[in-house]
Image (cartoon, rainbow, N blue to C red):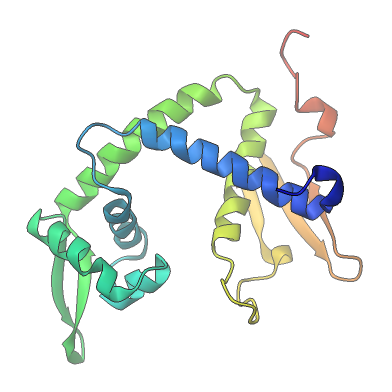
Length: 200
């Protein structure tokens, strides 16, 4: 690991995000009940829940897997009654996978355990900090969709997104001329975030 003094501000931010996401991921995994579905199965169920019926290849591409590596996962989920398989319109050789009601219930139960822990953890933050966590979650989701290769980024430009957090709303504005990004309306000043409403 390079010393912080030799890293650019952007590299330091990347390292901080990686550490925080990794640490939080470990904590959330520890909150899952005994006998819970493994991460790959949950990813498949989550994909089908969010995006609806999908071809096996589409799921594999979205989850960064080779289609063959998910064959056993698909078979086990079908055997457990958590997903179903049906024909694809206009393509008798193709197939679509869909989440079943049992699959939705399994996904909800798994999320409920983790969300309950996270809700308790958020109680330790101020309202301003919780608002910023919500904004950060939206931006982390955006980062997760970044393409792996060096080709053109087909995501919407940063300036086209509005992240709304309850009464607080932040508009992320990109200035391509200077590469600046400003957040407007989240908090009046950085100093109001840490320590607001807490004893010194």
